[in-house]
Image (cartoon, rainbow, N blue to C red; front, side, top):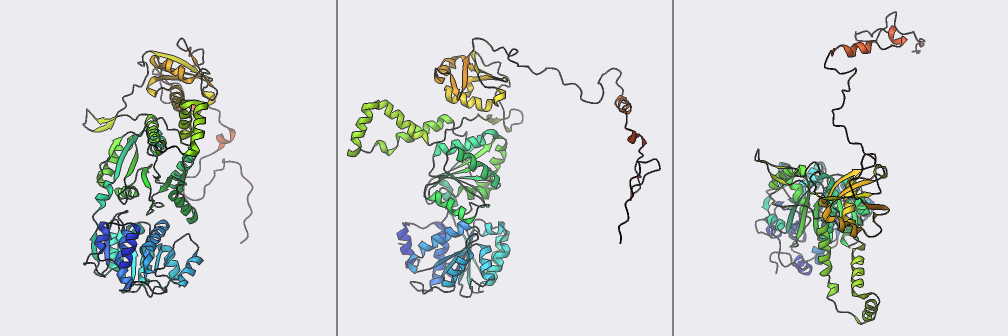
Length: 618
C-alpha cells in the first residue's frame, strides 16, 4: 500500500489505520531527497513527526529489517518543550514498533538519574529538549559517536525560546557526516543561517496542505464588551460542550485567574503554564486525554506542540500577538480530517486590530456575538433530544422500575426530573450585555462602534416600579441585579428600565407588558434570590423620602486657594493670603541653603547648632 517506505514502518502505519500519507510525509519520501539533509517547512498538525520518522529510517536501518542490540544512539530528535518531546517519543515508538527500536527521552523536569540509566542500557533513538541534552553531553552520559541523524523539530520555536547556543553545542558535538533534518513552521533568516552552517547541500521542501488543514477549522470572531469577556468564554464553552477545549491566555496570571473562576463554575478544568512542574503538566494532559478534564487553560509556550486527539474547540481568551501564533493556536484542532472551532473573544475596542491580524493570517472568520444564555439553553435541549438513551430499547431489568416511576409520579414529572438531573452538574450560562453595533461611519466612511442606546431612560414607555429589599449597604449593584431579575423573572434586559439604588432598597422599572409575567415567574413568596423580597409599587417611588439626593446641576466650585470672583479678582490674592499665615518660630529664623555645589552651609543666624560628632579614628 505504501511504496518507498521501509516494510516494518509500512506495517506499523497499516496497524495504526493510515490509509493515505499527508503532503509532508509524501514529500520526504521523494527520490530527490534520498540520504541528503533537508530543510522542511510544515505547519503544526501536518504529520511531520511521522514524516521525519519515515525520512530517517533508511539511514538508521541501512537495509536491515530490524535493529540490532541497542548501544550508543543512532538518531537524535530535539524538540522545544517537554510535552512536545514526550509526544514525539510516543509517535516514534509505535512507528518503529516492528523494527525493535528502543526510544529514550531526555527532557527537563524529569529525573536525570533515570535518564542516565536508560542511556547506559542503550537506545537507538533519543528524544529530548535542548537544555537537558546538553547537560547529558557535558556529563558524558550521552555518547554522540555513533549518531547518524539529527532532527530539529519546531526549529523556529527553539530559536525564539533562546536555545540557539544549546543547539549549536549539540550540533557541534555530533559527527560531521550525520544527516541533519530541520522542520520548521516558518523559515526566517535565523533558521536559514542555522541551516547554512550545519547542513550540507540541504534539499528545501515546502509542504502544501496548510490551507487544507485550516479548511477543517471554523473561525468565529465574537465581539464582546470588555466587562463580559469571561462570561462570553463561559457561554462559548457551554454552547459547544466540546470533548476537549483549549483556552489560550497570554500570561501565567491570566491562566491562574481563569482556572480559579472556571473551577468555581463546575467546569472540569486543568491549567498548563511554565510555573508548573513536569509531573503536574503530565497529569494535566493525561486528565484531558482520559476524560477527567474537558477544559485546559494554557499559555502559548506551555501548549506548544501538545496533541489532544479529541480537541474540538480552541478559545483565544487573549488575542494572539501575531498571525503565526494565531495559526499555531488554532492548529491544535481540526487535525487528521476532524472538524474544529477556533473562537476569538474580541473586546469591541480591539476589532480593528483583530481584523488586521486575521487578514495577515489569511483567515476570513464569521463575525458574530457570543452565544446568549437562551441560545445555550436551546442547545442543551437539542443535545438532550438527540441523546441515544431515548432510542435504546428498555431492558428487562429496567422495565419494572420504569413502571413504578410512571405509576407514582406520572410521565410529566418523570420527564421534569430527568431534565433537572441533566442540568444539575452544568454551569448556568451567563447573561451578556450587547456590544454597540459595528457599522460604517457616515462622516468619514470608516467603521467604528457606536452606542445607539439612549443615555437616559426617560423614553422607556409604560412601566411598573418594583422595590427590592437590598441596597447599597448590602453591596447591591445593577451588574448583578439585572442578570438575577432576568433569570428568576423570565424577562430580558430590554424589559428593564431605570434602577435607583438606595441605602436599604432598590427601585427597578419594568415594562408594563412584562410586569404580570415577572410577578408570576418569581412565585407567591415574592423572592428572587435568597431573602431578597420584591414588592410591586402602585406609583412612582418617593426618592426624596427614601434618601435619594440627585446630583447638583450647577458646576462644582473652584478648588483653588482663595475665593474666585470675576469682579475684583487679583492674581496676587492667593500669595498675600499665604503670607499672612502665621509662620513657626523656627521657619522665621531659617535662612536658605547655600547655592554653591558641595557641602551645604548655614549662615550665623541659621538653625540651632547640634552636638558635634567626634571624628572617627582613622
